[in-house]
Amino acid sequence: MEYMFDTTNLADIERFGEVFPYTGVTSNPTILKRDGQREVLATFREIRRIIGAERSLHVQVVATDRDDMVKEAETILRKVDEAVYVKVPTTEEGLAAMQILKRQGVGVTATAVYTKLQGFMAIAAGADFIAPYYNRVANLDVNARELIGSLAEMIDRHGSATKILAASFSSIAQVNAALMSGAHVVTVAPRLLHDAYSSATLERAVADFADDWRQVAGDTSIAAL
Image (cartoon, rainbow, N blue to C red; front, top):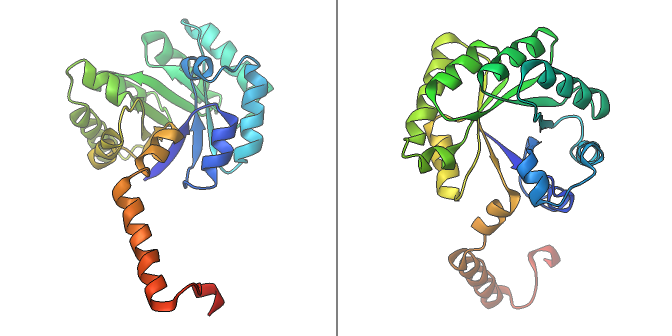
């Protein structure tokens, strides 16, 4: 079970990276737009500096044909670093690009997975990660849990090294459901994780413990004992 941050907000990565155990950062052009990033490659280089070499960084190509996807991937690897996982949409052209990149030893994340066929093909193409879009799939009246479960079953059946990196969440309930369905990794906006801890019940429990301690030991902290 792994958590990644789905953001390019540098302040959020630094702030929440000290709180939540995360293993990487994912991104796409929509996230770059949302976060107001304009110096794209410089942003990714700074993310790498923040997260270090031990965590993964996933950067998406935007071309639609295989040759241009490969060229964009080469630019990303050259101008950010060679350890980036290149996110490639799971189209026919994307599948062709994935196989070219894997023959070159490039890390690949197959993204925009909406169907079992897409996921199965990406696994067969050797993708390191496949990213089913949980909320978007659910909005199409497709059972996202069943989709992830089928992908997990196929990976297990064939001993594949591919990991399911579930994405596109509107709630923590969806995040948990993806993990329970067989996702190896979920990528989540860190503020969604933060909001999940903003619970009046949780805050009340912590406050009650503090009140009870004061009745036992007054204003003396445990550290002062």
